View 1 (spheres, rainbow, N blue to C red):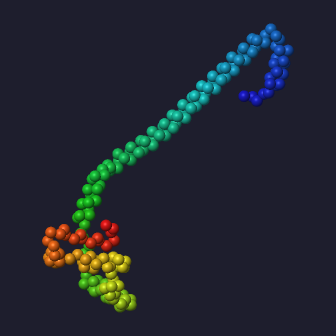
View 2: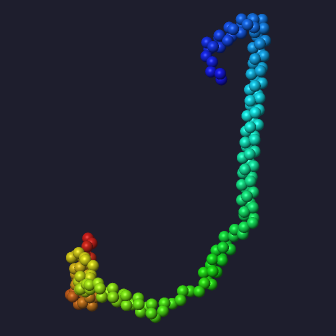
View 3: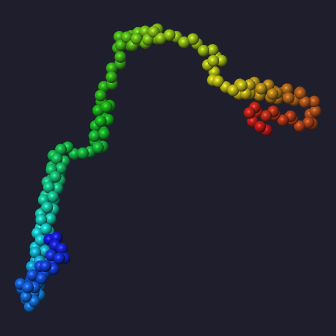
Length: 178
C-alpha cells in the first residue's frame, strides 16, 4: 500500500520500540490497527455510495431515453404493418395504368429498329446439315441401321419357311451390348 520494504518496516518497528517502550507498544499497535480498520471501512462506504450515485445517474439517463422514445411513439402514428401493406396495394390498384404508346412513338421505334437492321451485315443462312447439332457417326447411323435391321411384322412371317421354328431374336440396339 505504501510501498515499504521489510527493512523499512523493521526500522520503523525499532524506532517505535525505543520511543513508545516495550510496555505500551502492544496497546499502540492495537490502536493503529483499529484506526486502519476504520479508515478502510470509511473508504469502502464512500466507494459504495459513489457507485450507487453513478448507477442512479445512469438509470436516470436511461429512464429519460425510454420516456423520450415512449413520447415519440405515442405522439406519432401507430405502427401497423398490415395496414401499411394494405394501403400500398390499394394505391397500386387505384393508380391509373401507363397510357399506351402513341402511333408516333411506335413509328419512331420501328424506324430505329429497321435502321439498325440495315446497318448490321446479314449472315448467310445455314443449311439443314449445318444447323443440326453435331453428332457422332455412330449416333447418326444408328436410326437408319435400326430401321433397316428390324423387318416389318408382316414380312417377318413370310420370310420364315418353318412355322414351328421360334421367332428370330431382335438385333441388339446400337451402342448397347447384349
